[in-house]
Image 1 (tube, one colour):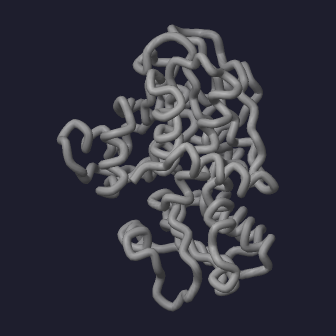
Image 2 (cartoon, helix red, strand yellow):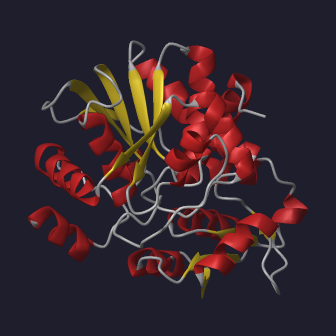
Amino acid sequence: MSTTLEQAREARRNIAAIAMRTPLAAGPGDGPVELYLKLENLQPIGSFKIRGAANVVARTPKERLERGLLTASAGNMAQGVAYLARRLGVSATIVAPDTAPATKIRAVERLGGRAILVPFADWWRTFETRSYPGVDATFIHAFDDPDVMAGNGTIALELMEDLPDLDAVVIPWGGGGLSCGIAAVLRELAPQVRIYAAEVETGAPLAASLAAGEPRTVDFKPSFVDGISAKMVFPAMFERARRLLDGSIVVTLDEAARAMKLVAERNRVIMEGASACAVAAALSGRAGSGKVVAIVSGGNIDLDQFARLVAG
């Protein structure tokens, strides 16, 4: 089941006091496209994840919230859940892969959350079981949840208000909640818009799955693109993606780093690796010409690493 326009509009009302309406900025003018940047890195936690998490909390009964919150996340949903738990005055437990960036784990801890670092397989199992041994709390799924996707779909509402004649959107693909939430709303409001996922060469399961016509597992190598690179696609998310998206554009690490540097120089914007993949994919021309929006999904990157990447 895909997010509906009415669900996104309800989510917009639900999250209005927590998530900001982010600006749409003109991006670097080089290349075959007229690029725009949707700056979700300006959210209170530096990422779009606050939208979906806030919508889940708004739609969850109080007695369930009082048990505390639990999520599995490499960093950005972790911060969203920890931020909301602090507002509610309840506990937040975060199951994160042991490859998660230290800067994101520190951010969770500053917000009062407890991070449990586990091997990748155990982290992925938490997504599948929606639970973690010994933790009795309300689980907020980072992507495969209707309320999370409806919260993400509010981005599409803002895009159509700010740039009603847009031609294409490029969205980082992690678990698929952002891509499918935005795409479902755009398919209702503007079915002519081209919608692409962006992945990175170090782990691009959606592109492989779309090519095969079924979910596939791929090789995965940790890199500075920590928010989206993965081994596999959830079957339910694959089915949504196959219906809603026009394809997946895979970029190299070098392309992502160059996009990161370009946006820092021209727009004075700090992007994390996932966002840089969307910008690189848009600038490549593979999403087509015209007015193309890249979703800058977050800006949570270690500043020393960011400095090395843009210097290189």
